[in-house]
Length: 339
Image (tube, rainbow, N blue to C red; front, side, top):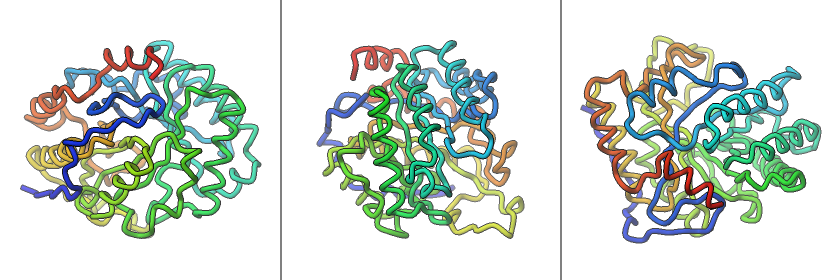
């Protein structure tokens, strides 16, 4: 069985509350699920993976993640996103949304204002939804195989936030998101746009190195000092099938990923994630990606559906019964209170 060490020191005895938009109380963590492709399937908002997750997991997530573009060559991709989130919230009107705003590799173009019409349209759509929304602007800014240009990224982030404010999208929390496994490559502070523009910080965690490297603790410590709550908007144990890798593509970002394992190996990864969240009370939201990656655009990843692994649902449900987690029913009350 695999072994994963969790490096960040235990600060569980020092819970924090920063007063950020939609932040749960000290010691609490939002239960989130990912991920919906509403741009690709605007009518299919009852995603099979979400339905399966809710049939497997005893408590429902109060927040769901998805993605948006404002620069794609297709003029209809933003329209599809706007339609899709509307359809989703018609059926699930109380959900919070995590929206990954994809701007790679055109951060310079977006920062220059060339996409302002689309950005304003997105801001108005999110505003009109009214639901709590975390917008991950240029998410995974430090991704090792394709990082954003730091200067352009800082400009992009600030410019996007200014447009959100101008359009009155006060229900949108500007979220600054790194890739945990890429933190050793460059100082994450190089991409920092400034405390006035950031509501939440975030880090995506997949490979075990995200739990083990000292840079993860450094990132969390810095966010705590900046008084920014942290969310984990993308996470799951990524089992890697090297036979399905295109040898022409860079693979450095996959260093440290796991070979295909069994249910016990899956659980070791989840134990590490639950331990990380227990230790670090600045982490206020946790998203699990539960889908069969092998059937999508990344076939070299494995199956992260909880119910696909014998014995895993029982362990997962037991862990999620911890009172620190804020599930759908309580999240509705939290969001209604204008947190």
